[in-house]
Structures are given as structure tokens and as C-alpha cells.
Length: 155
Image 1 (tube, rainbow, N blue to C red):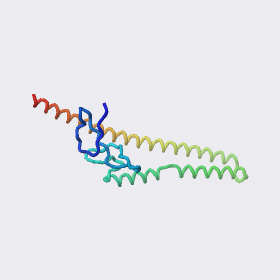
Image 2: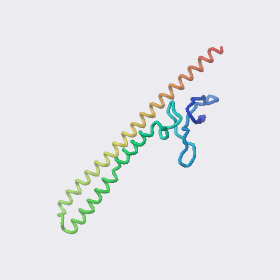
Image 3: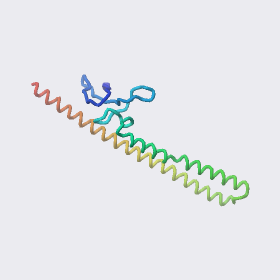
Image 4: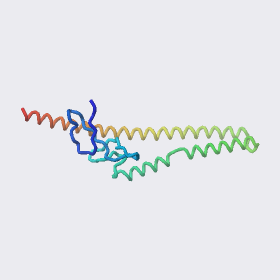
């Protein structure tokens, strides 16, 4: 059974027993309708909701700051410099080996930090989806109860 897709959040019925899935009223950059699901009481998905604009800005800023690209580039530059220094005789190979071991440990920590951040984000997304699912189930149960009462009164 295919769900009826609706724009806006008027909570209308899906027709012919199908469930209604409210879709975002916004348009994408290429002019197509957004396919995002709306939150209860809104006409927009979280990505387009004007009330969430500040939260999106903060999240984007945090994401930009948390990218390890700068640290990786710095570490790579330092290791290249260390290799040049070893080849030029300015640094003993044994000392360079110790520094390389430290750099390897640093690299593993960067990988761990990235995975940890991904897990936190994944957990937050799951929590949001669970909330949406619970709200949708509650709305469907309420609608089913209303229909049952209506059918009972018709008898």
C-alpha cells in the first residue's frame, strides 16, 4: 500500500484507508518540492523550518569546527618535515622513529574521536526518529479510536 503524500501539516486522512504522510512545504535549490517529513505542528521539515534556523546554523558551525582535516594536514606536514630532517641529517633516525610512533598514536586518537562523534550523532538521530514514530503511532491510535467510536455510533 502506497502512502498518500501531502504538503503542509493539516493532518488530513490518507483516503481509502492509507496513512497520511505530511511533506515539507519548502522547495529544494533546484526548485523541486522537498521530500522531508514535517514535524507535528509545522509545515516544514527540520532542515527548512524557519524556527530551527539558528539551531541549524549552530550545528553547521560545530560540524565545521569538528572536522579533523586541519589536524590531519598539520600532522602530515610535520611528518614530511621530520622525514626531510632525517634525510638531511638534522634529526637522528631513532628520535624520528619515536616521533612517528607518537604521530601514529595521535592518528588513532583522531580516528577514535571521529567515530565517537558519529556515534553520538547517530544516537541523536535515532532518538529523534523514535520520538517521531511514537507521535505518529499515538496519532494513528487516536484516529483509529475516533473511527471506532464513529462506527459504533452509526450502528
